[in-house]
Image (cartoon, rainbow, N blue to C red):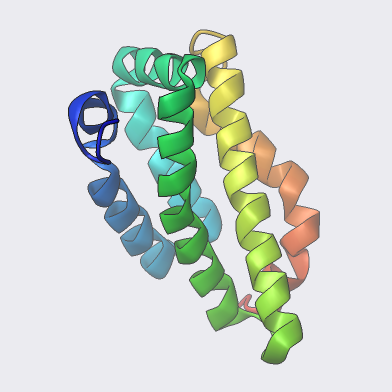
Length: 147
């Protein structure tokens, strides 16, 4: 059995830390919607590569499992964001975890549709649509922090 980060996994996930770091910077500087859009635009820039990559990850159980492990980094990032801006206490922690899970599900759902549509519509449009569906669930978070 391969160790994480070796062989095939290293080919597919070599840039994971950079993607998480870039998303964290965008999240801190521009907020949730713009950070998700920035990630979508980044993937769209190298569309053919990412479409092939995501299709292969979806097709191989070992790669899907590794992606699920690495997705914890995104969940922690989003949950931290929601904890900073959300309610305090145990209820706020639970809500932040749920909001993080919903956000990641929206992003992954948009990616799946992108792959299924062979790049159409473009990923930023699909992410925008996914966030629009999600937004009512996290609307309270957004409203509390409007300037």
